[in-house]
Image (cartoon, rainbow, N blue to C red; front, side):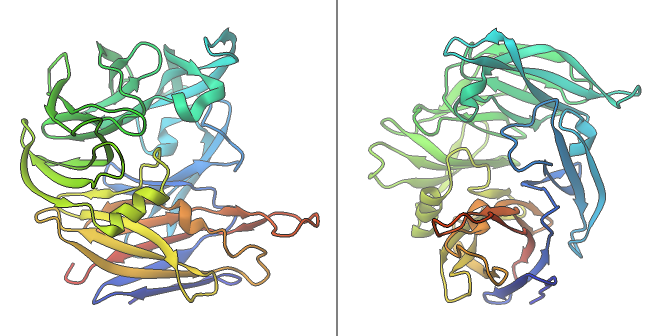
Length: 392
């Protein structure tokens, strides 16, 4: 087991079995709230201001590269949230508020344009408006997007139910498809194409858009009123947690293979996964992460005897069999004097996988006081973890 700590903040990591866990304590100035693998590199990124509601073109964001061996950060950048290079991309959706464009539900609209890297200052350019949605209900109406197959896929499920295929190199809109309304959809991409599953209040089948196709095809029935808790795809497999209604009905985890989503194995949702879906908001991308080579990973926040009273239990699902195993338990301690140990950044984890390991980002988190006496909110610095199962 490996561990690291920084002055003023205690970090300890305990390993289950032969797994190895390393940790790097961040500072409160490290404004990162997401982590991803982009073009073969691990990158952390996020808003420069903790009060930012969404990454508008007028806001500032920051990013850094993560060394997978040492967890050290390099190539720190800060700039406009509309700059694709800040996120290691050539193209990103850029969102801003247009106060002259009222939304049908009231208030202004948020508009989406495609930003692409450009030679001229400031290093990027914005294309025309391709989508709009109500700005006052951003969390419930924001579009969904994913990169895959050399394209950016952008889905508007609020107004026109359009699916845009955008070149991930130039930012040009290559295709606009009319698709079924799927509220707050889950998107995944593999060699078989784009996969879309309903979640939350929506229901319906699992859909696939084959490469070169112009319409979605329903390929797997999720049961009466069914929806997906999470969706992951890579290679020729799609892993999905299928929840029929009512939600008291047991959920099932499936490994579906090939273009027709033929079941390879299925297993009842474990107590661990049930706890995860109860803890993590439906719009979180980090409920389950991974792929066929790194495995499928998840994190459960539970009570412990640590100073913070909380721990993260890191589990891995074998993508070939569905077997779930506890890999590590991570304990984080608050700085002395933190007023509210019951509030933890452990509950807002973000993660990605890389070369067989899980990389977890616990963002810097404001902790409110627990007494009615006026008191400044304390910010608890974030932590970056790497968890590697034994034998890898």
